[in-house]
Amino acid sequence: MSAEDTPKPICEDHVIKGRRLSKRIRKKVKSEVEALTEKHGLSPKLVTVIVGADPGSQMYVRMKHKASSKAGILSDHHDLPESTTQEELLALIKKLNEDPEVHGILVQLPLPKQIDEKAIIGAIEPLKDVDGFSPQNIYRLFYGGEKLSSATPHGIVTMLDHIGWGDLSGKHAVIINRSTIVGKPLIFLLLNRNATVTVCHSRTADLPSFTRQADVLVSAIGRRESEDDPFFITPDMVKEGAVVIDVSTPHGDVEFEKVKEKALCITPVPGGVGPMTITMLLQNVLDAFTAQVS
Ligand SMILES: NC(=O)c1ccc[n+]([C@@H]2O[C@H](COP(=O)([O-])OP(=O)(O)OC[C@H]3O[C@@H](n4cnc5c(N)ncnc54)[C@H](OP(=O)(O)O)[C@@H]3O)[C@@H](O)[C@H]2O)c1
Image 1 (cartoon, rainbow, N blue to C red):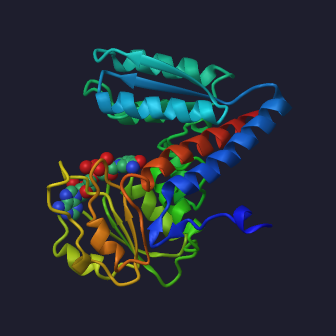
Image 2: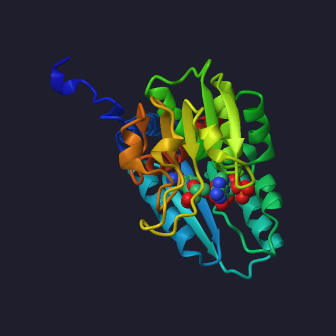
Image 3: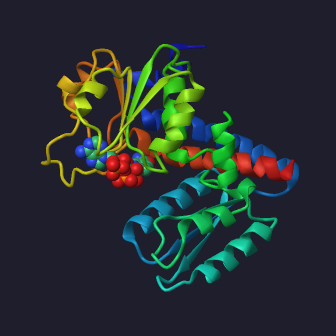
């Protein structure tokens, strides 16, 4: 292998290259999709659903469709009005559950208040639940399984795996977030890797006393409204040699340039967790397809 063929490291100059890792995984997903499509005469298909006109949801879903198409994954989309009832949405999910040509279903959150999010997520066929939020997939995660686990936390641990921090025995991981899409699933993924896990949130007293103990620090506070707002995580709050993962978008929580000087590795915003989230969704669609055709 020539020097040019040697893959570049995922952590370079203390920065975790989320885009570089994403590109690598997406290439692998694409070639597996091509092989399975050839073998089964059928391509994986993702169907997304948005209820209402939230501009953030529209943007995220467009990015998911674009990435799917590049990976050879077919995709379809349902835009439902804000006034959609729970029964109407459940009827659509039933139809998608029963369609043998649909392999992944993603209902973009948040949903309007007349719809019970838990009832909708619970109605998605677990084998097609590419967001990993269905009770069966959470149960599987609880028992150590990682197939179809939720994309953002799965992207975070995949980055850790690729920088050689796949086994976290003896390491203390501190998560600042307890949401169902980031913090809670991440607890189990980190425990699966033998970390000692602490979870902090808005009611935690003396946050720095926890962050300073972290070998792995994951921050997903997401309250900075502009680049001029003060950072939540400053260098004095970070242990020398820690791995720091900043989940928040569009403005990161962490004072990147200064924390980089202390950290072993740190994710940038943008270009860190964001691309990995979409990549893990593609991986989930591939895994869902594989499970359904085999
Ligand atoms: N890059 C990606 O792919 C991706 C994916 C998902 C989310 N995100 C980003 O991640 C961030 C979090 O998303 P989310 O949906 O999990 O948001 P969320 O539900 O609002 O969660 C924010 C968490 O931060 C905690 N928090 C708020 N203020 C705090 C403070 N001063 N000190 C300590 N903890 C504090 C909250 O505590 P309480 O629980 O006590 O309120 C909560 O657990 C957002 O910026 C979002 O855009 C990015």
